[in-house]
Image (cartoon, rainbow, N blue to C red; front, side):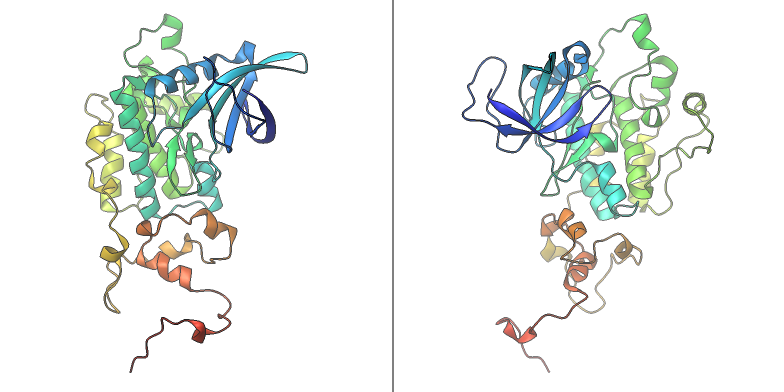
Length: 347
């Protein structure tokens, strides 16, 4: 595969992510495939590439799915005297859901949260039905694309369902503490219900911009794990969520993993029902704003010319009446309202 390493777009403890610049024609072989002009390469030294190689293996097993990051192959390179392992993946130009929360002032409007959550559940359903567990669901691992679609990424910690673990693995801290389920903390159970608990934490964070667990200023990881493992409390469900949203999160935060809803069950929950089309949701009269919520506009982009607006320029079928009106309101008046041929005179 003939390529050049481009701009660095991400960096972690053991890997960096760069844009891929194709160089000439790619030659197909057993280790690589053709990739589009816009792709990313995730790289680590061979000595620390275990999680990257695990990610490649899991993605190959999962196959193509609209809610899972696509993998275009892998290879090895020698750079500055070191041998590196490279994994080629889709590039998400709008960053992660964690970035989107910060970009929009710490709160994503619920109509967007519903759509994002459904996409994540669809991805989890595919992962779980194929016999795998992601093990690290969080907003930082959900990528956002230019069209507003999201996909689950970072399968470095993923594993097969029911996979036998060593004594050491059962007590290792696998995943991100703030998203860990009680059974994972207490017994190292890395199974599909743990992904659902983490999903609930992710939804709360999209709503509030803060972790699902209310942490003391001087709290450490171990005090948090004790709280989770004690099963005496659950993360606080945001009061600003709709009734459907609160019920959805409650289904994710059931302490007993055997009673916690599965991804397949959550797909039928009212909170993530398919969004109505524009024609069905547009107001018919001056007072036809049944879904109007006064504080939604605070988090919705307010200038069509701004970069913020462009980041949220998803398909119009998802925009509420409030969003569409916001897009029409600008600081400056148009140069000439009379230039349009579509105006109709009314009395």
